[in-house]
Length: 243
View 1 (cartoon, helix red, strand yellow):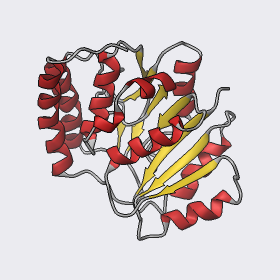
View 2 (view 1 turned 30 degrees about the horizontal axis):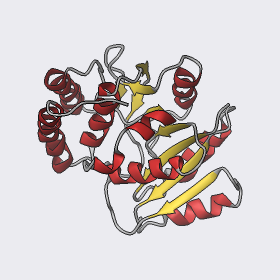
View 3 (view 1 turned 90 degrees about the vertical axis):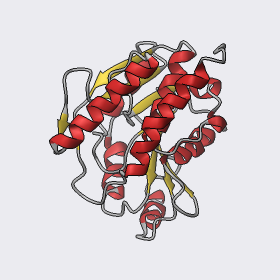
């Protein structure tokens, strides 16, 4: 297996962080994990530091001051990976909405099938979401429809945050120019990978809403996605995408 990093951003995830780390490390593939903590006042980072003694060389921690947003956390993690010799980089939430066992499917979709970006998709085989109210399911589903309508991107789950990238994708995309922080960040990364001609495959997963901790969803994040997609599409009409 080529060296693979799983990036997990955290803010106040003390109830989830140890179980999610232990679950990833229980898998038969030797993933490494990078926790990027945005100054969680609940002691999330302290739990990670204690676990680093148990998993030396596999569990990494980057601490940032203040709640700086999901998008900037992932960009921080991407740079961390590119400065080292990771060949595949995964994104995953800390709250078990993403099943860590699906990391194996995402990794193999890239490493063995030759895809550049694997997306853990809630909508590629109907709607596979558990414990969400119907209003949120509809909002998420039609948000992806809206993105496809505006951009033309052939992806069913455009806001998905469970992914595996081949290193070259992150080397090609100018991540410093991505300023979005929420769902719009996830959309922009997929859009850029598609525009650069990378091979993308959606992998069906079952998404289960968190049972512990609080959701970070907000109207600001949703609004950024709606208007950010229009801005992204308009700007894309005036540039070329060549590797």
